[in-house]
Length: 133
Image (cartoon, rainbow, N blue to C red; front, side, top):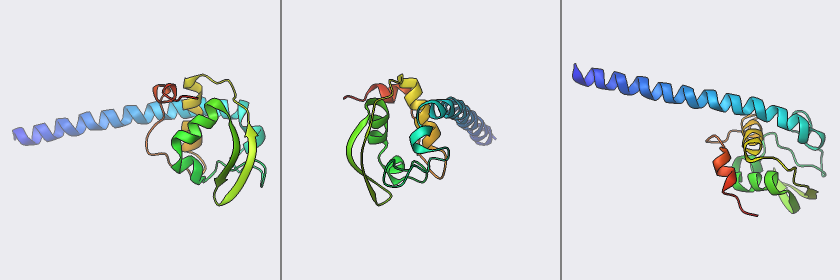
């Protein structure tokens, strides 16, 4: 009986922690959607499809899904030079947007959990703050 109660309590605590993170992620994504609409939509389009040969797609993007640090770095500091996204080469210039670390985390959570992307864990402002130019 004690084993059952212990397992039950562990399950409840685990579920509460999961739901809390899920709620935090949902709130971050909602804020990130606003940041995306203000700063990213012009180049990367409403559904993250980008513009062929000009602005890389963010939707179902191997770059977003597999290059987390590089993606965050591009949002925070801008990006210049050649990158490959979904097998296509892009050689452009993305200016830094001047976003705060929380805004960067929020927009990355939005992009990373939208349009077929699936980041493994939530991006936090603390993670963004560790990035160096």
